[in-house]
Amino acid sequence: MAQSKIEWTESTWNPITGCTKISAGCKFCYAEVMARRCPINEEWVLDIKEQCQNAKVAFYFKQWGGTNKKKAGKMLNGKMYMEMPEFGDVY
Image 1: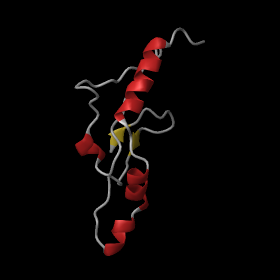
Image 2: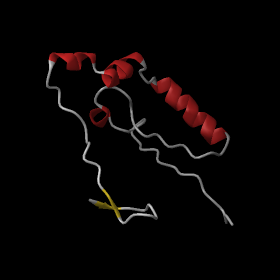
Image 3: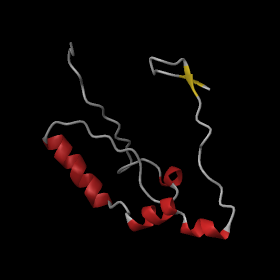
Image 4: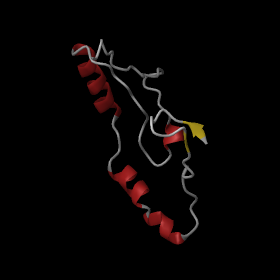
């Protein structure tokens, strides 16, 4: 279990971490079909990054798409972009 920032609980537990292909039916997995159908194009990401810079908005690149996101990683041009918006006094 992990400590939680959710105010109404002290800890959380998520037993689902992924899947293991166990049958021939797995080749029709909806998650993999969608990843192949909707690939991410580096030009799109770079264009969004440029738009964010021009608008002075934080740019956060989570990860490359595909069927093995951990292997694809989250580096864009050799750098990780994990900018977060700045919040002033919110009262």
